[in-house]
Length: 242
Image 1 (cartoon, rainbow, N blue to C red):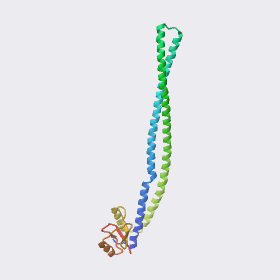
Image 2 (image 1 turned 60 degrees about the horizontal axis):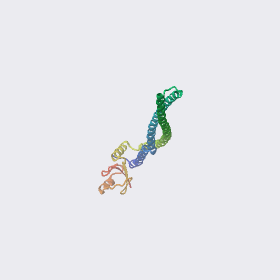
Image 3 (image 1 turned 120 degrees about the vertical axis):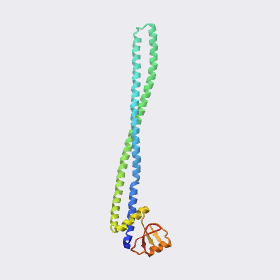
Image 4 (image 1 turned 90 degrees about the vertical axis):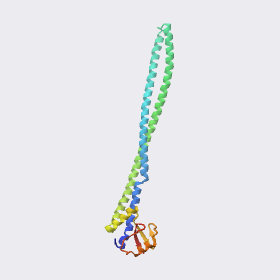
């Protein structure tokens, strides 16, 4: 393939523009704030699940307290009724002894149930505190997620603008290159994984250092300036500079 030397040289700024685009696109995909946003979003979801469990624990604790209060009240009411019967003085000696024994048992039972009621109250208070803390964590993480999302949008928008400009600049450069040479450039670039063109000055190459054999150096030097040279040893397009 033939192309003027200055057109071949235009491949160099095109390649730099492509490398810039690749860096920007990689930077866009690997924005640190994206990872933080993902971590915060996951933490927020976990916090919401924990908050649901905490609210469920509160509901369970309230039921336990309500049951304990009911049991205490039931025993208290029976004690009061039996005490009124005892105070009426209308019992025979045997019934009196039985009633006094029951009252002693009810007093002990009431004390036990009141202890359980107190434990249930304390359990409810702890559950409510835990639910409140869980709710606060959900709110805090929601605010952090929102802030990280805004920052992600801002950083991403800034990179989008850079990428758009880089693409426009690339198109401007590519317009100066013939379709055949541009196609060859893309083919080589695809084969090598990104780099397509090297500059040869004397025996030194940029942007990567290559060691050409003496045979290939002779072949490069003997190739007309308007003929595009693709290295047999390294597969790059070689742009020659004297």
